[in-house]
Length: 281
Image (tube, rainbow, N blue to C red; front, side, top):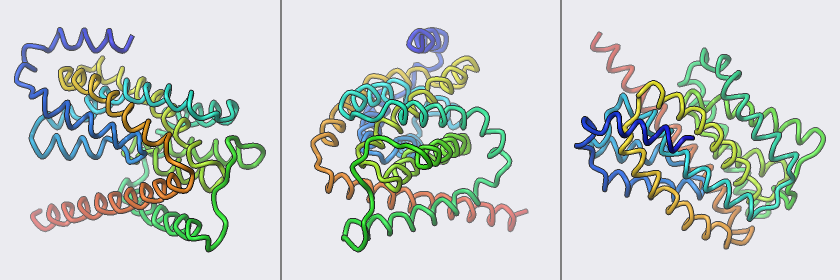
């Protein structure tokens, strides 16, 4: 269904999209989805690349990014669902929670100040990265080997993923917070991958459909990354599955720290631009 919608969009817009530079878009998209599979997230990488080389109109960027994510996240989900034997109840509960958060929770968080959210999340992730680092250095026990949640931990996971799904609607990625939550609840680090991949696959599918219907995408760019994105996913997934738990835990720690820093930089950049606007005004 999604492929058919994307193809029809391309047929409708191919004339005025003829100047779209496919090769650099495809390369950036493939690399971004490689990083996405490692848990870093692809939107920031794609946005930086597309803006740097002026590849996609800013007005079409949100819709294009969502459309580019659909097939890649579906491939990610299929790979990690077959590779990691996560408890079905835990997986389904957390994925549904994220989807509900993105629909119903969006009404709640849409009124929140995005700058405050960025700063709070940045500080929180930095603290958690420190805790994870301490756990890796054996200063105190952290993480675990469980592939499922029960009782209060399952309830906490559902609540957390509901919030993370809602925060996605204001530009806060789900991957790093979901990784942190799963790790702190005592699950195996690899268990986070099918949970966050499936959550984003469902969210991307529904949001992309809305953007296509509104004709707010660059269909040539979306199709290009629909091809190269899954290739980057397959290569990265092979690397992740081959890592032992200790190395994987270090990867998760690095991803959380990276996300904290980039979120703080986004907060600082927007704060500086607002100051300039106020001084000019």
